[in-house]
Image (cartoon, rainbow, N blue to C red; front, side):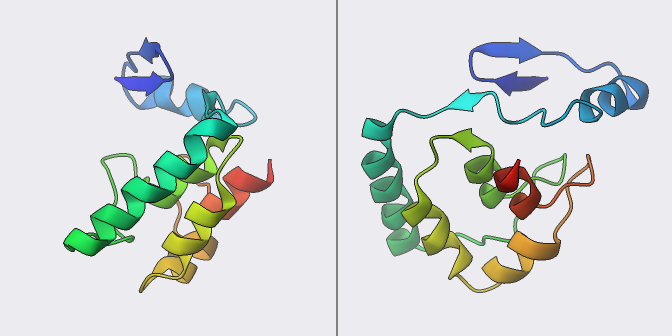
Length: 110
């Protein structure tokens, strides 16, 4: 199941996922209000202080934390800068591809 905001969607196999990826930008349905951006940054910084956070870690679909940030409407650019500055962040941003074949950079540019 993929959750896009409050719209869960069950994907039924590789063909269905392929159709999902054919959309212009299947991830740009997640909206973040400008007022939420400082809270997002504070949470990311807290997680970094606690340690154990690797920006290169991928979920089952190949998405990293940078994918989820890049897919957010009204994204907090400072938060993206913090993650991109982490060890491996630049590499993930430019060349890590998820199951749809997209990089975080491509998601943010759309």
